[in-house]
Figure (cartoon, rainbow, N blue to C red):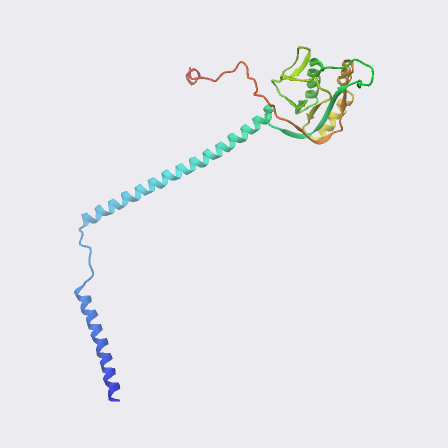
Length: 240
């Protein structure tokens, strides 16, 4: 029992001594107070406000740049979409859609008597294209050569050529795309009774018209479009 009391008194004495030491140390190290005067505090606050203002300015600038970047990306997307639409209208892309295929071939086979055909009349093709356009044709190709606004069909040394491509191999196909399947049906019906088809017979040619097709493909114009009577506008001239 005596030993236990001694141990207990010893532990209590150590705890009390530790508490006194901590309190004494706290007294020797008081809390540091802000000794700056009012003007110094105001100057520090002013500096903090200026720094905050600069940070807000930078954030605002970065936000403006971000919005500008988003706008430019949207403008680029609009420009790309517009460019794609113009390419389609100009015939610079492959297109597909409902339509009919006209197969042009000699009226007489090689084993049958008759004058052998070497080419097709350019006037005949031009008249046919005009008639197809009247029937609301959207896209046309002749022997896989796209027909566009600048297409030239003419006789060169006795051979009809479309944009320089000779049409002296038979049979060849004229692909015609309509606006819709209903348009393809109307196009087919009009061609069936067209006198234009009969005109080919006078040149010893026949035109076989396919049934309306749900989808046919017309290739893109393969050459660089020729643009005449146009030149870039000079900025100074434009201002004048």
